[in-house]
Length: 565
Ligand code: ATP
Ligand code: MG
Ligand code: MG
Ligand code: MG
Image (cartoon, rainbow, N blue to C red; front, side, top):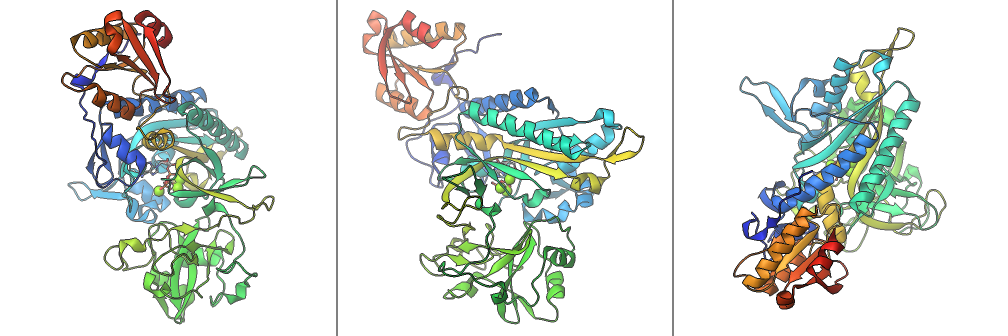
């Protein structure tokens, strides 16, 4: 195997910046831009510079190795996709505003793939004909497109981003459970190797549909998910996936379901039927006024609301949509919403415009009010976006009753048992052992490859800057020439020798840049080991510094090479 050439900072296509980018809200965004890993091209659209690309490639490699290890086969499907399969499953419409739809020159409808269940289902339909062809797991590492409502967290939430998505195809439920378990193990190995701190949490299936689903959540302040962790048992769940009976805002007493002024309490079945969606859909919350009273009814997550159908369901009551203003000064508005088990959950929002410091139960979703004609930024201030917290700190663990601990986290992976939803819609059968067609059962599994880079940055950075774990770092050692010609010569010499021994080297050989600036940059860039040719270069003595601990040691060139190889 050829050794990587020494990467010279004097030639590197990246500049470090002293100041945080003006629009940066989260740490990873600030640091990845400042350290010259990524550049913003447009909202939620990013360019990966050489250092960033190296880290991304390392994450990709780890994901690929662990997917290959469970027998998954890598393929590459197109990102530009025809509409028809998405019509067959209903997702052309149901995916909502997040789907990038486009037309070709002949007026045909296309989309940019946000996730590929349909296309993989069709691929297997085309390729597999008998039970002998199954089980099979296919995966790709590919750019995905989602027109996110709030692409505000840098690489964490792109509108174009890199995902590993895989899909399993099995004949029986037990096979699916096995494929799911394989993925769960592979994901554990991936995130351990990446050096990410993570929890496996129960999750809701959301727009994907299906039954069992778990998320891999990396605790971090910048995260947009909240998970509940039980200090007593091994229960951990995204708060979205926890149900409790309704309870009033002040936490006192048990509210009776009769208090909810819904004319007839809709069940998932009646509601789904009235909205024309499959009952397997996860119904999220929509607030409407019925006879002037605000009630919450379920609507499928992330889908356009068909108000005609909502009205038909509540007929003859007058239905009117609710806006944020309806909540101002109304602490009495305590409502539940329809979840998979019927009217079961309450959601709380903390909206300072409603009542400072008060948690409110409403039916807003993450993107704001789910209401026709209501457009964020136009019809209400963007600061009216509400943070939905279903469960509050200290609420009882559904398994053992202990008070739950809540933390913010970044969703880095998600695994689903889809069942036969897609196989039914696209008629994916193979011939069974008895010669009769068998409907295939599926799973789908995602890792946010580009997001993992930012999540790692969030979890590992310190005051000085980025601080990569060894396996993902853009280099093994950052050699700094801290001085004049003598130091540069020594730095380049040791760099060449290290590279010849298979060490990945980044060397700061920039002329006319002070040692102080070079040290600051080395800390910012975050390569695990920093090797400095400085004061004692004439004697051939270098200083080795551990980026994380800050420990320093003086070594001869031979000692340094021995230490780093
Ligand atoms: P989120 O809840 O953060 O919007 P999601 O649940 O919509 O994510 P999935 O459909 O489960 O995402 O996709 C699989 C994985 O892809 C996620 O677990 C996440 O790591 C990654 N991912 C999803 N959306 C984005 C995005 N906009 N930018 C970067 N990574 C993303
Ligand atoms: Mg999403
Ligand atoms: Mg999610
Ligand atoms: Mg998800």
